[in-house]
Length: 333
Figure 1 (cartoon, one colour):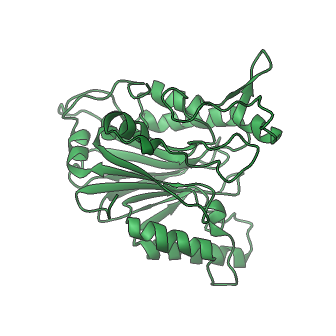
Figure 2: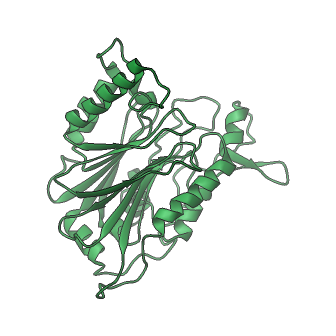
């Protein structure tokens, strides 16, 4: 993976644990935040960046004047460090809001939409357009699914399908055809369907599972009393015709390392490493993927970074729909 060039559109997802922590003192950003932005993100030069724990970069209306000032300082510093324009979602019940940043030289930026209901942590949702194909909207969102409620996540996941619904599944650029692309990236707090995954499905009934509350958050008790991992989002996205770019890289491009674990390595008694940080792309634009890389963040965060590189020329063709879409579930094997 090299530096992104004009021939590549780079999508990056980072879950920086609790935004790197609070300020060391007013106006002094913490070391982990500086490491993440200066040593990891800036060299990557993303065109689209999803951040899933902006703990100290966004505030509630009842926050103190000092807390609000600190959040504005940090969010301004993030945009300045990367040379990108930022969009924060509003706070929900959760304390780790999300946001996304866009490189204005790569995209034409449209409307930001807010989703204050249903979501424990509302997603950041911004519509973009590639200047080469200005007639096609790219519905983009970063999300952080509820950590504590399988039932709550299902409700959130159904709401995400409202964004997928903007993708019209016809093939061909007929006059007047309404069509859009869709990119959803986030911390799913769930697992991929185990078929074809390099790690075995977690055995939640193992004595090694000592965090029983976490098991209630991540698995569902079956009628026979055993526990099974939550995979609802992965199943739903594939039912809707969306696809995981990491699976595309592994299955079609011979990049098995794209399926590397992104989380779970920093916690004991919770089932081990997992691939809970994932992306989903529509059946055309996922075919523009040329490389997916998982960047090790040990010592900086409890989640690794995902980098998805799209071939710009192929992305243009995908948005124009000059080739057929992938079939639902085609990459799950």
